[in-house]
Image 1: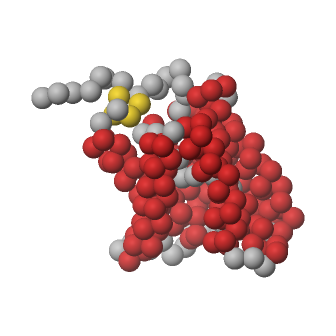
Image 2: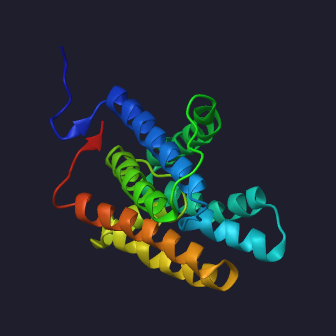
Length: 204
């Protein structure tokens, strides 16, 4: 049987990675919702802008993501972009289907923040290691890590801090502060566990 080099993923391994990563993120989203919290990244910024201006969340999220997909195509390649599209599509499906069989109705906010941060961090690490993201800032974060050596988690955390600075002005401070805890945990997990000098597996 023909096997790829040890440092490369097969198509099957990438498919499993995308399914596992997006399923974990769907679970993380359930925890976030159960705790009544908000998130960072482009999704969080879209929520804040739609809340402040009265615009459609879906429309804002779509428009804000467009420049990142252009960057993905130009700098990261077609394969990366297609896998990112697939990951976003899978997450959309899982977040709709998962509550039909599993519903988390209530969590203490700080518990929800920790669960979201841990599950979301693991989910993104899995996706990153299989050459995909969930769009938005994750694309920039991976590009900067690959080309400039800047830790992807640090890039995402810097963006999240800006997003939550706006959140503190629009949401109760308890909600914003607890939500920020989840974002910090998520991005610290990525900073510690996804580094170019430690992990070199690539898609075939």
